[in-house]
Image (cartoon, rainbow, N blue to C red):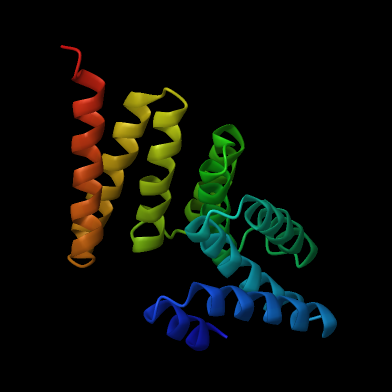
Amino acid sequence: FIDKLDTFFKTNDLTGAGGHIKYWEKEAQKLNDKRGLLSVLNEMLGFSRRVKNKEDGLNAVDGVTALIDELGLQNALSSATILVNAGTTLKEFGNPEKAYNYYLKAQEIFEKNGKTDGYEYASLFNNSSATLIELGKIAEGEKALNKAIEILDNTNSYHAERALSRINLAHLIFDAYEDY
């Protein structure tokens, strides 16, 4: 599923990617493959943001949330990553308050599992920073970006993500102080 989806994205075939996701969503439902469906809906989260499809995005948020509960994965690391993705979708489609709650739950899962030093944890802070800023919590947004940068710098990898975090921080500082 993922390999074929990546092929669609590499050729920028968004119509094909959307059809592929919808096909496998129906197949997973038909086969009662809940873990497979969770993977498909997780991909739908990002895809819906990319194509600006609010309905599919919010339906996918509801779907992954229900499946995480149904499968008893509330404390699984994979669920933390999915919750970050769901939170980012909620923020994108106009619900930053709810998004922030998803980020808090994801952070709790990462911390319970001792996974506070990798790319996924840094992504939590990168994504939550935009939500915090939108909620008017500028200092907290800045703190989140600095945390993401610290984590990514310690990996000595993810150079593009490190640069983007710094650009986002520069924008935050510029926007916060442009009236001065």
